[in-house]
Length: 145
Image 1: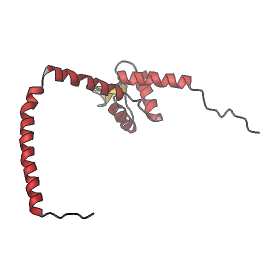
Image 2 (image 1 turned 90 degrees about the vertical axis):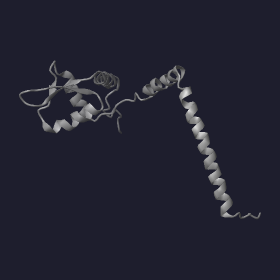
Image 3 (image 1 turned 135 degrees about the vertical axis):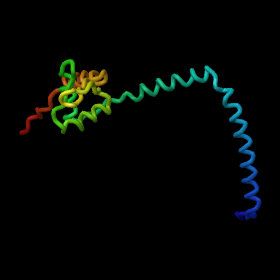
Image 4 (image 1 turned 180 degrees about the vertical axis):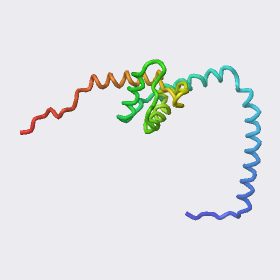
């Protein structure tokens, strides 16, 4: 099958004509857009946001060190857990990014902060303890001849 070659002028004219026509259409769309923003459109957008939150509730995976520190912070009474070790600060920051702990008031004497368990951290500890109780210990119970 033979292909017809056309001159470059007609292509550029067609493209420029399409751009001009497209410009007119986009201007028409901009004018109609404010008319569409009504309370019913806002109501339709609201359920989409709540559906996204349900899908985002994935289980948080923590390392053994992070889990141990989370248990320590959960076991401390009212003022909160105060880190004595500088090496723990990186783990504390990781837990704080995951919103499992929250930073409290600064200790005036030492200059360090008190950390307490957040609601998400409490849920995580409860779920991890429930998993640990239901999962049998892997002791390699199979006998080899």
